[in-house]
Length: 291
Length: 239
Ligand SMILES: Nc1ncnc2c1ncn2[C@@H]1O[C@H](COP(=O)(O)OP(=O)(O)O)[C@@H](O)[C@H]1O
Ligand SMILES: [Mg+2]
Image (cartoon, rainbow over all chains, first blue to last red; front, side, top):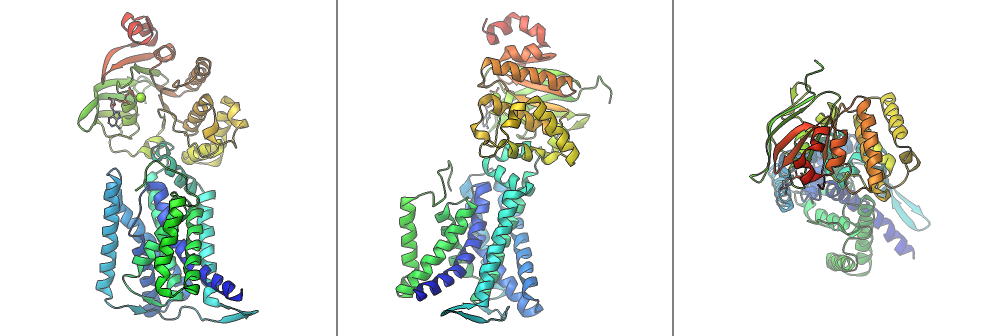
């Protein structure tokens, strides 16, 4: 029992990182019906900004986090402006292929800057508390707390502000939102920026837990978070969070009871089975167009 | 601005889809305070004309509003300049409540007082919407949805109101109510460009009207004159 509880705590840490990345996929999908396959690499860039800020600038953790979020927000909005906006009226598949290309570009750009995996210096002092046999580390607590705080901020923006109202409106009918006098392009840029900033934050939190960054770290993480988003119901913000935590939980529990080499195989098999039962994800409902 | 100077002046307007012309060089204008109607059968190019004015579709020719060309002006800027467009099929946000629909439409309201004044006006025109403000807009009746669509447009305090078939799919009594409100809105100073397949209602309230057939204006005149025109009677008023 204690063991399961301990593993659940570990699952929360991993799940909150997946959830943050999954939110980026889902935000963009909900307004443009497009999968931003460069998103995993934005997460990687977040990790590298974190590495650079901590190594060369020795910035405090909070500043590092904000810097990484700021840089990835600009990167996300920039990709939208340069690569995706010209294709907005093109077939969806063109945008998806472009996104894959942007991701590969980001990987190789970073590879050019830093051909080797880099070690990220300790960003926070680690402390481990023992609570009745459970061991909880301060880093684990910080990761989950920061991730949940960011999710609450996003939820506030989407549910309570005019910008969020416009984002939700665009997911229903973009032209109609423009006719309300809303600068739709600006709202779309902001959505990309928010999604990318969450991915960048996830990159920093990931580097807290696993302090090595490499240019391909976004590939598998990106796919997994994408699957988490699909699992929760792509386009649904709460679905992405749910999917992220669920994926984290399944992964940790599989590793706890089976040899770790079976982890990805088992996880993906379980997820595919779930998608056979609920093809639109846990919270999703059928929509007209899917990528 | 001179009172006789048109608020909207359209010269040689063309709209094409994949090289196929839907609007073939039409010209008309709307004076301040007027109701101008464009009637025509399904597929004549009425919606395309309105979409061009709002910047929703590429166009050729010239569209001049309040003395300035609308070429290259973004959709939301056109709304800011005072042109509100109630699109075909109303385009209500069905998953939003009535109030959320109105809040999104209040994006262009410059200040709280302006917003409250506009809201007041809308709820006075359509008390039924006030009672249903927390109801999901998708569950409103067709007439109520049209009221909501009109209300959203009015929140922008438009100088020019573009209406795409406001009578579509509504019962005759509801249509009469909607058109009564349109006349009221027009009397309060808003110029209206109205597009209708339901030619009778459109021509009845219009100062001037044009008949559009496969992308060209084939007949123009005062609304009351066109109602008496034998060709219009045969083609659009059911004989
Ligand atoms: N998005 C579009 N793509 C291709 N053709 C279109 C499009 N919209 C309208 N058309 C065509 O343009 C013509 C005029 O359409 P429209 O302006 O909607 O007419 P109306 O509103 O008078 O019914 C029609 O032949 C229609 O099929
Ligand atoms: Mg039409």
